[in-house]
Structures are given as structure tokens and as C-alpha cells.
Image (spheres, one colour):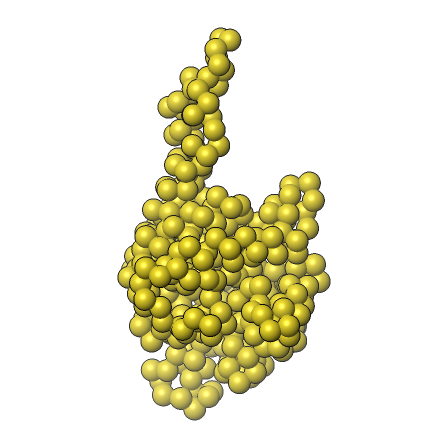
Length: 353
């Protein structure tokens, strides 16, 4: 088994549970966060891997329910097979990169638990019992659409299953506005988690003794595309939640009991991101911005080289230009650059050990 801290430049596999725990501990101790990059293809996965390697940062790569559907084949739409295919591919190609990468599944609502997270936890449990490592290092249960009591009750059940599989659970307490994968949240007062929400979470799930979990507390987060300044974030909400949890646990006021996650970050100001990290965020989801970086480069390629990618007026075009590997490499490079930007903003660049 590889050690948690590896020498820079040495290829390494997908993070073991021990390496992932160490990654999160170092982020918390060092006041930085990892970008969690959503992918939906081998190309976007490779782009994310290159971006983390270029930044000298460990990182998290994740698939949503829609991404998992797509990975199984657009006409198949099987989230479990798509996820396992993604994980198998990632386990192989990540060996060639000199950073630690954890695999995660993103937002899973209640109606998809039985067709997404629960089967994947069962697959990882089987793998662990056979002496291996879990397919994924963490899974998210998105209970934001159900009452808090039900949210936390389901979280208790899933946390026990995750612990048995040596997997970390992510939960969401509060509501993220906007739309992602067909799930839409209203933009109202529910966008702001309360200290009471934080205390209820600690009472239901504990502080790690029942299994480690990540908490997506909401502080005005909105999924989708927004210009900087248009999203009204209140990072102080996170500090208030940490302080309420610390008081409940009998810890000092400067303790940070929660491992926090930042969702819906598009349009966030640099100072808002920095404040969120200062208040205990160690994972920030990045999807919209990397999607755009990838697709924008393809658009540039097609528009500027249309005479080559199209067979115009009976001509034959230019195979070197319409070969998917050609424009794919350009798109991957552009997305990798955006991943480096995310690592820099979250202060994880250069932190790989």
C-alpha cells in the first residue's frame, strides 16, 4: 500500500480510504480546499487529471446522476454501470499522474438512492470484504428536498453503510438554488442553513464516531451560470454553524467540527471563496465553469477551422482537423487550465506532498 504522502513526480493510483482521509485532514489543517470536478466522459476525466497534476494539487473527481447515465451510454441510461465503468477507467489512467485523486458521486436525491448510491455502496462493500478498496471514496446523499428530520434519518442509515464500505458520506443541510441535472431549488430563505440545522446534524450523525461525513451547509449557494456579484453569498453562515456545533460538542469557539462542502460556486467572488475556506470548506464543486472551458475551445476550433472540419462545396475537408482527438486535445487542455485556476483560488495548488 502506498503511503499517504508521496514524493512529487511519482505515479500513484486512485486514493485509498486512508489517503483520502489524509487529504481531507491536510486541507482542514492547512486552510485550503480541493476542487471537486464534475466529469461525464473520458475526455473530461483526463482534463481534470491533467489540471490537478499541472497545479501540483491532489483533487476530487466526481460524477452526477446525469453524468453517470451518460457514461453508461446515452441510450442505456444506467447510473450504476456508468459509475462503475467510470471508476474502473479512472483507477487505471490515474496511475500515471503524480497526485492523489479521490472519486465521488455528486447529488443523489431520495428517488434515486436505490438506483445510484445504495447499489454503489453495496458494490464497494463487496470489494472491501474481498480485500480490495472501495470503487468510490465518497458519495453524496442530497436530502435538501425533504424535511430535515427525514434528511438526517436517511443520512444515519447511509452513514452506517458507508462506514462499512470504508467510504465517506456527503450530506446537504439546506437548499442550493438554481438547477442541476433537472433538480431545481427555489431561491429563498432556505438557501441559508441555520445554527439549529448544524446542531441537529451533530445530534443525528455525531462528530465522526459513527463514520466520517462531509456537510454541504448552504449560505446562499446557487447552481448554474451567474455573473460575479449576482450570487448573494454569506460565508459567515458557515462560521456560525461551526461555532454552534463546537458549543454543542463542548469544544472551543475556534474549533471547526464540520468538514464543509461548497456547492453552486459559479459567479462567486474571490473573497467569498476565501472566506468560505477560512470557515472550514475543504471541498468545492466545480462543474459549470469547466464545462464552458471545454466547450468554448471546441467552438473556437470549429468556427475558426470550419473549412477543414466540414466538407464544403464537394471538397474533402481536413482529416487532421475533424479527427475528434485533435479538437478533443484542445478542449482538454482548456479545461485543465480552468482546473488549475480552481486549485489556485482554493489554495490547494502546490499542496501535494
